[in-house]
Image (cartoon, rainbow, N blue to C red; front, side, top):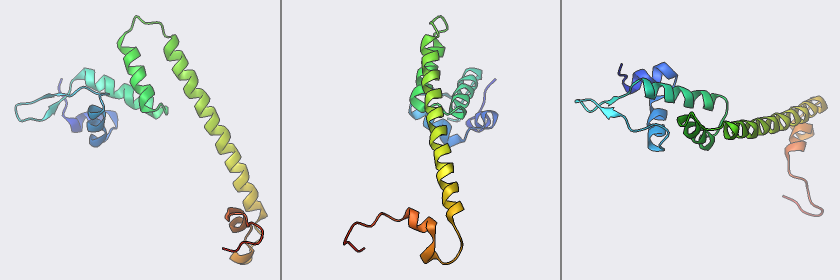
Length: 138
């Protein structure tokens, strides 16, 4: 079964430009061409692009996707490296969640401090402004 780039994109939920980008950076092999010079993809490319999309949906950066693809190409390898990549990524996700939780708390506190009035008296604007240094004016 052969797919055009548009069909491959629809089947995987990937934009055509993204598929071309993945080809340029080597995540996907350059496809064969039809006699009309159109890209032609098969089931292997569909599976590989689906793998890439799922890894990206899980937030893996492209360098880790490349590593995971390389590891998946050798099915006999020990999966300890895959586990380590996933653990590292989970730690990064947890760090981002902690950062976002702190951000939510800070924004919530800013909103709670708002008493209405004019912008000149706004606690949110005050909190966003750089701290004034003694004797300096802007």
